[in-house]
Length: 202
Image 1 (tube, rainbow, N blue to C red):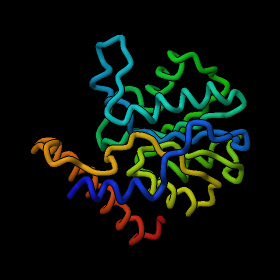
Image 2: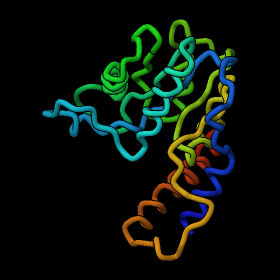
Image 3: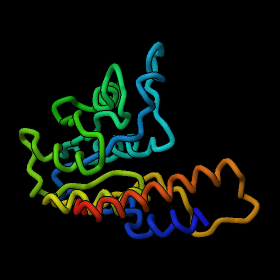
Image 4: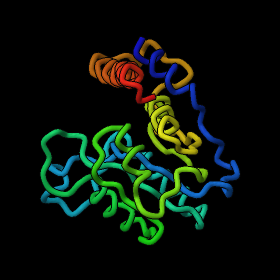
């Protein structure tokens, strides 16, 4: 059942073919959520990504394939109580380690929600939401993200990554731990979208 709900969310914006022409886009808007918390980073000399790592890794691929693109990373800290480097600061460490030029990347570091990603990212100097942007985030999160960005006037095209549900789920792959995680993911997005609609954020 949770896979069916996730699949419903993911299929609203299908994966973009690897050979799709992207020259018309000014840049990428990459949403946070793929980096481990500051607590994990502390005391280690390595970049730490989580299960949504494709948000970061695919962004690097796209930037290398399209050298004229800019990258706007949106992400402060989703936790109410946080200390240390923001997610945007940790993202800067990752992108630098991948060899991306610093002058091609902008960081929005104050947002805590998808709505704030869209609003605060548009306020950065040199960012024009009317230009064509690719929006990069987890596939199941894409419906809420696209609606949020379009609500505040962004000209965005979905570039979903981090797909979690295939075309079908074999019965033998079911597990209690994965089932609970998938329920959490599905309900987080469905309830989140309903709440955003209630408060006119989509």
